[in-house]
Image (cartoon, rainbow, N blue to C red; front, top):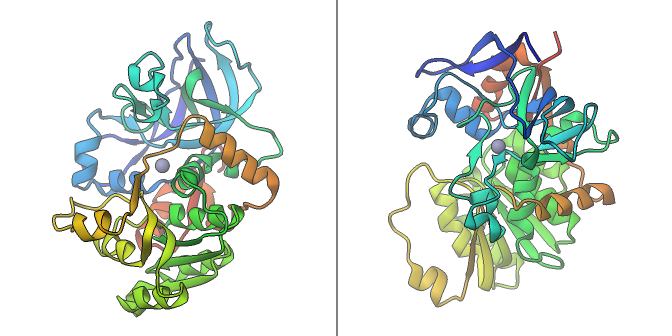
Length: 353
Ligand code: ZN
């Protein structure tokens, strides 16, 4: 398709983004052109917005269109695309994979060595159109509204973090009240956890945790280390079966290993601002026989199938986490809310005025 479109781009190596008029992407034979109906702001986009150390190490190709969580309709199909046609309604995994590399053959294409990410290395979805390889597409039913389609990528991350091992009948502690932590509460609930605890630091987001049906909500700013004892007291003195760390806060990493029971599981999902230097593997992991599971992104595509099943069952409803739905033009307002941590997920609409 020829012509120009509206896009939010990182144009120069400095804080902020620009709303610009730019060329519509020209698709390759294995790609489709997607008309973006909804796209969501991710925590990583906030790093790019603020242009911190992490952002500067990650965004090497400027200018680039930001955004990797989106849903929309296919308006053009490349010559080699087999499974999709014009008019299909889709979302996508944020990973652009190389199906031929060895890690992909092992089922690890989402962390493959040749893997790229929309809005990181390749133009993304904060635009009216985005070019998407067929290997990243995920078909949606029109019964799923586009704002839900747009948050399936992060919801999938939370799904893998919680369900990489079973949680049915187990006590689950979630650290972090950002969107991933809030989604993790919903997934654990939907999967039949015995009791779900949410640990966070901001009241508006902890309130969202209650809406996502956390049984117990603790504000770490008020409780400090007393929350460790509170959870031990509530679990016959032995600790929780499962801990999901989604905050990236060094203090939470410490508390995570204090509240998990012997023989329990800790999933690490949150990225810390810098490597944690002091960590006692002897006590924290070996002698207490803790299983540690690192989780990055989502498995393609078994996690998507699992998440779709949870949504279809009616047991998982992510809607309370979506607190803001605004035109793409107002992206600065969305990022301001992310900085203030007053919101859940922010949806941007490239075609809304
Ligand atoms: Zn994301």
